[in-house]
Image (cartoon, rainbow, N blue to C red; front, side, top):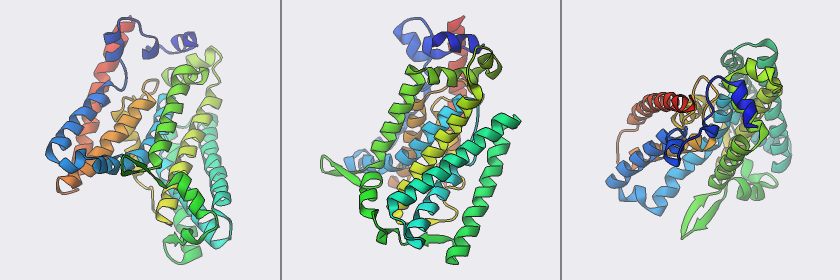
Length: 350
């Protein structure tokens, strides 16, 4: 497996780097994110007792979970060399489908979720097909999908309800069971934690296993590192990219369903703008914008940093406007750190 990635990309694969344990740790993509996470936690924990309490941890892990599910999927896509700007609005589309079918057309929640999953996978397949067949930049293709979905969400919602919101999911058949599985809580040491955290951990573990232990993971790195070389050694680059777009769509369905079941209503504009947050979390976690480098664990750590900053600023009583300043600073520092780590990794391989 490793020979494919090694032949396919001129850029080195950190997974097969030699050297001692310390050197292998230094070239890991998520190293900068781990350091950032420790610094951010130490800062907020030293300033707020609530932040470091079990209830506080449950509070900032909640936004990290939904963001982390999407960031991991986006990280896989970025490692494969592509972007998906429609991922944020697709979470809203899937949530709207679930609530609309369950409240307006009498479907039980499970059937509505199944229909939403089919639609989401179709959108991912469409994005992947257009990108691979036309060779247009995925930035342009998914931007077009983003605008189309935004229009559909708003137009259909207003046509059906006369407003920009669909509500009433709580009265639908199967709601309580579905909410328990996707949007419930679990008790750990007397503190309530969202079930979404377990979904997030599962998604991260599966993505890490695929990247590090399977042929598909080797192909993702190869396609993102050098697509032409990957094709030359027999990697099914087009199928791999379509699968990655569909993986992102699956994550959007999961997050959209979680949010719909949690709030029982969905706004037509939900998810818009979140696609940039997903990309930022992946970059903070070590993914390069040029593809071929990154990790799922790093993207999850990027989401944790986001969750800690989001809630930590509230716990300290700061103006929420400072959050974007903090996020921008983290993005710049992470990008610089990733660049330095990447150069070091390439030197190790020579």
